[in-house]
Image (tube, rainbow, N blue to C red; front, side):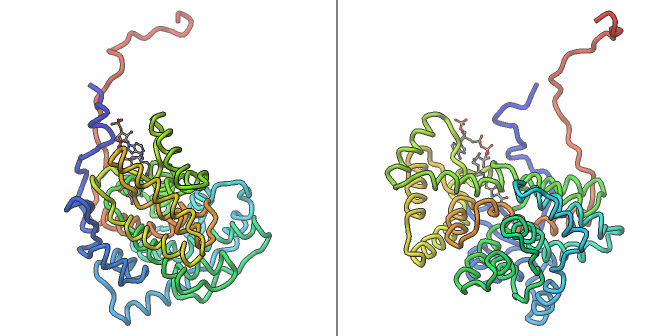
Length: 373
Ligand SMILES: CC(=O)SCCNC(=O)CCNC(=O)[C@H](O)C(C)(C)COP(=O)(O)OP(=O)(O)OC[C@H]1O[C@@H](n2cnc3c(N)ncnc32)[C@H](O)[C@@H]1OP(=O)(O)O
Ligand SMILES: O=C([O-])CC(=O)C(=O)O
């Protein structure tokens, strides 16, 4: 018998073990290696979280300084990769650009031995923003930008390359916080994809390329762009309420709401919502925040569905002047840390991932030669 809609999608199925993260263990909580997401969002820098995920413990000051300095040295792109990025059309989606960029890097600097994995992980963390913004700036304003900025953080590096100037303290901190919130989430679809690829003893770049493809869809990371497209359609909170009511009546999905594991709230949402409000006030334009809040209210009242990590991330990024098509790629700039840690964890105790399936096709058939069909 085929898996019913209720049991489909591996919902509720435990597919392995991880020491990296808990999701919804207390109904709403999220922890990375035992640390509460609220502590990390309030106190950590994204690079500390990256180190925690990949090395298993928070860095000392000396370890942190060395890590940040090392990442800075890895921001450069090989010339052949720059050429490929210049050839990817201007109308391409940047998630496809990253998929191609990571794959090309896997040709230029292949992981020929698993002993190179930490090196590959650091290189990807440092240079994915470079690939993205090199392509973006080349195709939007014809500039071949210098991707080796001196900023101390991934957030600073990203915003500097995007806007051609160092970001404000507030914008840098807000982007850094969203990177922390997006970094890791147990066996979500893209991470699971990376683990399946890793399980065949394939290379690091293949696992990350596959994960980018999985993250791209609007049921997963692509929801932050879809949420932006939704909220910018409405000219007032009242219009948003009416519009969403109509969509629900037509059984349309509202992107940025609901979750496979959380049942009452996504803990990342309150942090994003607070930042969205702060950035709206700083910009002196609360329109998108007010519309977002109206959508959140009507979704809860009508469906008891809550905003997930992607919903208020949309307005946060918009208020920072980030174009919508770079929203899901920012998720990649962050989740590369979780993916890398999972690839290493999978390899440390590897078993091919190959589940079974219930057969729903026809019974045994008699072969009919082609001229008799
Ligand atoms: C960072 C992240 O990746 S977080 C997830 C980002 N994705 C989105 O925001 C996309 C919108 N949300 C969704 O599609 C879903 O809630 C998912 C994919 C996140 C989870 O999916 P599932 O666990 O398979 O739940 P499923 O889609 O079956 O939803 C259960 C019910 O709630 C409804 N529902 C769930 N989410 C939504 C939504 N966003 N809008 C409207 N209805 C929804 C479904 O229509 C379904 O109703 P039914 O039982 O009457 O058919
Ligand atoms: O866990 C999931 O299914 C999706 C999610 O929230 C994430 O990957 O951050």
